[in-house]
Length: 256
Ligand SMILES: [Zn+2]
Image 1 (cartoon, helix red, strand yellow):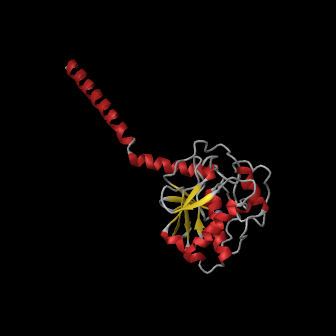
Image 2 (cartoon, rainbow, N blue to C red):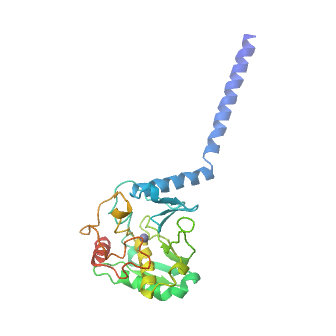
């Protein structure tokens, strides 16, 4: 009887161990990894100082301040959480990649190629900067710019969305809401495009303070304070500055 009980106990223990072993692989399957990455992305956004209330879950990506998007499967920078380069940005394009950032214009955006070229020319003309954005017509490329109907929340139209750089590469995607900017002047259409490119090469909103951000980094060297004429002021589609301000140029010169 005693032996039988012992045997039962041993069998029960072995069964428990097998069950425990079986559980492990199940908890590390792919879907959970994906969930984990989106959580990392969310934490990264918070670490950048964006107010939690401004973060909108758009399904495949998070949207912040209406026009900065973070793909849920993006690679989160390894230095995330540390106050990085400056509060203009999360991270910058590295010294090799900045020399030739290849821009592919999706067929849905070719009707605004002139505006795109105007925008790129502005960034390329910044004195004391070696950053260059060039349109390419075939892969490989670094930034895809495409047309998309955009809303932050239902009914709230957004003109464009950019992405910050990751791991030394420019933000890979720019979405432009062509319908939303079609009736704007040429200069304002180019402004929206120029503004989004600013995000993809690391700039954040110059008017971050009035938008409720809590800066997580340090300012671009020599470029601090507010700047009413900055093209990188957010929330000014159709009405904001259409040429880079002196401070915008100083920021790019300092970074690149
Ligand atoms: Zn913006």
